[in-house]
Length: 216
Image 1 (cartoon, rainbow, N blue to C red):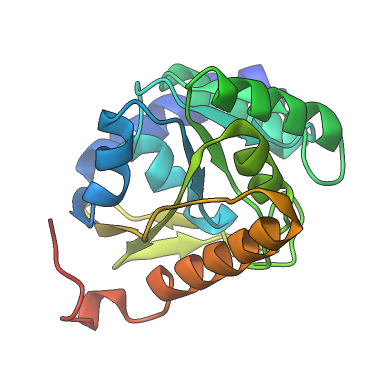
Image 2 (image 1 turned 180 degrees about the vertical axis):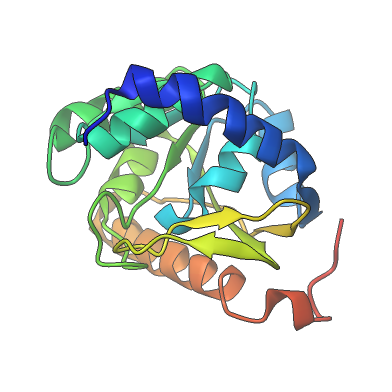
């Protein structure tokens, strides 16, 4: 049975809020986004699709826009995100991509931050599509890799193994080194390399056993 996004929002939204309030969130390297944000720079957050839920909760009511799929699943997430203070930019790499990219560039040029899931909406899992780097380059934004790793969670049987932290789960949110995308093809290629390397570094397994990551 297929439910409308409105029906899902009425039932799942309150449950997700109650669940999220129980999470015990710890953060690492918040200066990677707070410093450029405090300087008035627009941010392009990049995160794997599987980590989206706890990151939506962590950055709620901060005026961030998100690029979401126009498919049914994307509308579910979009409606829930709207209740947390996000603005949605419909589109993805497979549907409405050009429109979403243009909307993201306009947001960034206006000094507003945008969150991207560059392996969405259909994968492959943890493989970056270059649209986020193009948007950051054209929009003059600072790119900030970010990942959330719960110590206990449910994993959906989906292409991304979408994570839903369990009640009272500890969730470690780690921000990677921020960077700017330099002009030209060389700057674009280097931006892709930095984004991939940054996401890989902060999303490796065993986050709760890595003493080398300092908790802010």
